[in-house]
Image (cartoon, rainbow over all chains, first blue to last red; front, side, top):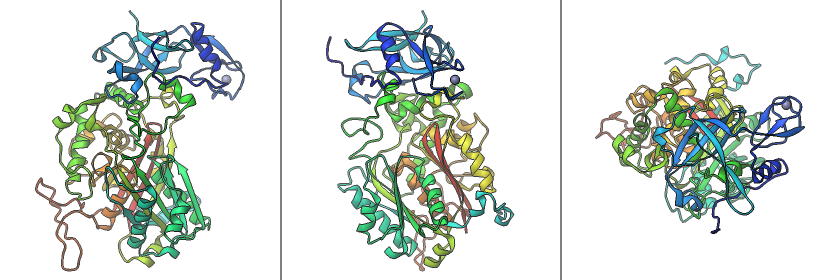
Length: 137
Length: 422
Ligand SMILES: [Zn+2]
């Protein structure tokens, strides 16, 4: 594998299970053990009931496009080779939104709010698997 | 226009401070790309100029506030260089939207009896040292940890973080790139009357739309300029300001600082993404001012990007929700229009100082001391022609009584201030 030049995650005690889940091929969402509210990205407390108890539930990996942009400028050298690329904010069926990159060669002009998407997991390095999205075929 | 009487205001509310404080002094260094100076050097110059403008000497200033993201010089060092002995200082983390927030803090600190006069400054080599735009070796220091939940996929720069809000606004309300390009066009026409402006050449809508995409839908000319400069404001009680300088004063009527959407680290999780913090901030700004958007003569809506001015003008109520595209393109915000915005050219054209230069410009407008190139009369004062035609040199707005500054940190955080002439 050639040298990986993009920034890599920095797990915290709060987010470690999320990153570990990706390595096992699962998108895990943090879920409040007291009131059941799903939250993302991982953090210590449920903002609905202030509980610090949580468990992890596997997401369906389905959702809808909420908003997007297309980057044309190399803000980071690691992404230079893939310009232009689409950044998407996606609302997962579980009700939380994630910010990631939309893969699969979609044309920005074809995108609509509500367009169905699915999560795809991509191996970045030996150590890291990262979640991206693509349009549902 | 008539102002509502301050004596009507309920003194049990924060409103009792309305018009009690003034921006007594303003100071700027040149807006440059490549200052060849330290932030310490620029800050001391800007503060020294603001003190001279206020008619104050070192012993008249005893408080200092600054903001930066670790790219400035600690305020007590700068105070010492100016011969100022401090009774209060604080250096806070932050960029855009800090100015108005710190003005509110300065009022509170003076009101608490901790000091009597506060110099607020921002000094930054925003081009030659730390570039907020996040490009190349001088890019802003990488944010780590939880930011990596988006950074690993290519989210990094402010344009990438903010543009999804604009994209959704276009989608929801039919706002067009042509409409927001008019913000740049208008500010460039204003900057052409500002000898200090970094970019002084007027541009057209076509120029904006034919410039290269940075983050679609944003073009290069939708993005502000990065410059090296320092700005200073001196805050004190209105009567003290008058004791030191005999001129119309820019009085602080109402201020709101760093008001937030339900959360800012992931503001996109809550509510419509096309709504920005001004939606909440206006509920403090206007009631405390006893005024509304319709009373304002000149605005300073933060233009990190063309659309940030639009989103704020809309959410502070200068037009109906969704009609910001029309508001910024129908002639209202240009000189000669009903309510000009960023008459010095703003961050898009004059220079980039995280909002403080937009406050300086509104102070000049309220005082009637705009530094354009209109002729100087025998009394040494500028004779403003109010000729806003293409060949005109004037950027002074006639009869300015009320101004509003709308500061932007990001979609989730904003600050604002209403000033009145007094
Ligand atoms: Zn809960």
